[in-house]
Amino acid sequence: MINIIIKWILLALSIMLTAWLIPGITISGFLSALIVVVVMGIINVLIRPLAELISLPLNVITFGIFSLIINTLLFLLAAKLSPGFQIDGFWSGFFGALLLSFLTPIVDKIGRKID
Image 1: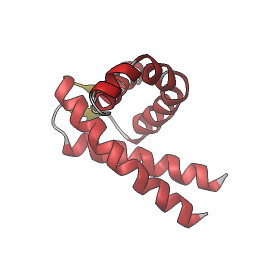
Image 2: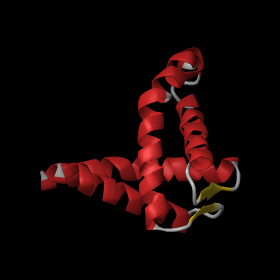
Image 3: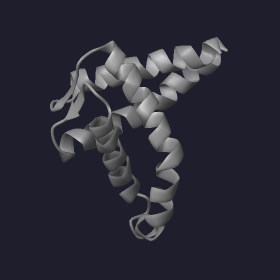
Image 4: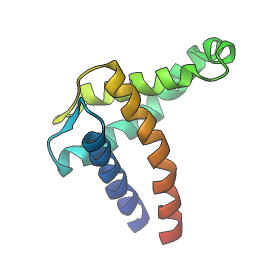
């Protein structure tokens, strides 16, 4: 249980770091970042598998590069659904999703070491 809470906090800090580093992404505070992590988790469980299945032909044709577009669109959706979290445009969302895709495995690795 403590492991989940630690990962949740670390992912919220990753969201805040992303908002700090990428122009066009703003977050109002740590509580908003915690909410964004929950919303992104729900999106990743419910919507991502369907989006990947539907885009499978494009992913095959582009050798998986289209997955970056899916990540961006889901990140933009999380911003629309989360209060206090805003992404100004596609490219801000693209680079934000790209940065988060690098930070998330690091957070997972830290979470495993704590466990």
